[in-house]
Length: 374
Image (cartoon, rainbow, N blue to C red; front, top):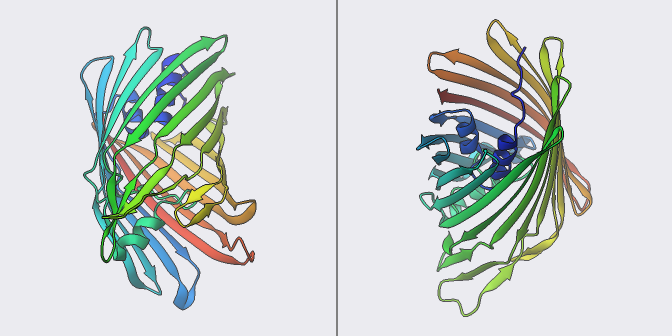
């Protein structure tokens, strides 16, 4: 039977730090004792049909390197190469490709593995200045509903600090974490006559989480609140600056794992609610994305097989904006010092015009191969 490891206060704290900073994949690698991970991804969504068919495709190759200086102090480095394209009627309208930013993060545990500190630096190795012909491709991948593995090519220089503390309370492990991210100004868009400079708002994030064993299974719950200041923007030589707020975010998630017929059944869900804000061109209405997932994990002949089905629902200012059904299958294979995790997925659903209610069909395909060096 494929059994999850027992929850511990350290994992509760480490999971909080992963959720509070941008280095969740790297921290996951740390917890697994992995020195190197690469995970090529291919993702494509097709919207509509016929001459107006619109497709957004991304090919991505992320890398994660872990440097374990001691049992309590590790440094992880994360970067990626990505190519994103937007086609209309089979003709490429916009594309962007290159390295993304590089994240360097140090994690330090204190005491009986109950307290975790993290300090991170986002180095602007990616293409954070986007030209007009790249703007559509760069903008389409930053979507909370249609989920691309790389959501941004570059965000300029930024620093993040976080701390998480966990305690055992009876049969529960309860954790609390906080972090702050500060970013420097960078040139975000190259316009025809000038550059559009952008300073992201400071971000403050608070997260609480809890997990406990239930019989032979496990239950975990989480709640995170992200507060943002005001983004600022102007053009080179501009006389004044424009400010806007994207809206604070509230995320809740939960998971229940229970052994079933020689395998493990996972029932999970999350909900992302973004409060109303202000865009540079007008109001940013409130949004909500809800996701429900059921997965079954079992071993067959030494190969871990995990099929899953997922439902995702999107609302904008209370109006229906989209719905998706995602079908996925994931394997785990051993190959000497390597662990291989191939996966395939197919999506089908509808995007809705929030004003008229008219719907447009959307389909998607994704494939990935995560390679972990043990």
